[in-house]
Image (cartoon, rainbow, N blue to C red):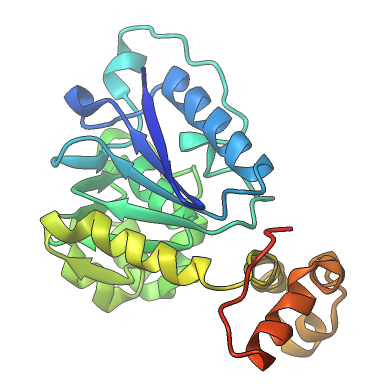
Length: 255
């Protein structure tokens, strides 16, 4: 009811499906999306996910404040908005295809993704202070880490709207394309990721994300990462060099 999914090869496409609410999310929708990401994480045949919003107006307008104001059941969803903002153990890549408004929790969902591909109609903001709230689903921490403190505070302290082109200048958007080309662009990025070893991709993401926990480069570089051991045991660790030597396309196992 609240989420549509389809697969194309090793790519899972997830669509938040409340277009009449500009894809604002309430607890039942967040729970449904959390289940989808659980399945994505567990399925070795799915290597990359793309999340987008139904319709052309909005990626996600954030928390469904009307649902909350009308007394809707506000049960907790442990893994946060879209089952993603509080999920810290997903090392498969996730791409946000932002097709319109990404406000509040919607922007926080996008910031929790590894790449943001935006339509030229996309708008981003953390406007929670304008309604007496704060961006507590990760936005206050992720945005400064991704674009630097001063630029982030310029958005956080004003709640101002940022167009897609400025988002790319600030550094949180990877690419801006016309609305009609958005999913093609997101699929192009996902396809480039799928050309790489899934084991290597997961290891790269895990090492990069966990390395950010340590400010000192030498300590981060010298730390032990379990993901590296798993990569060295993967069949892909043999297949990659073998395919290179044989001048053929590798056949990744996904393990």
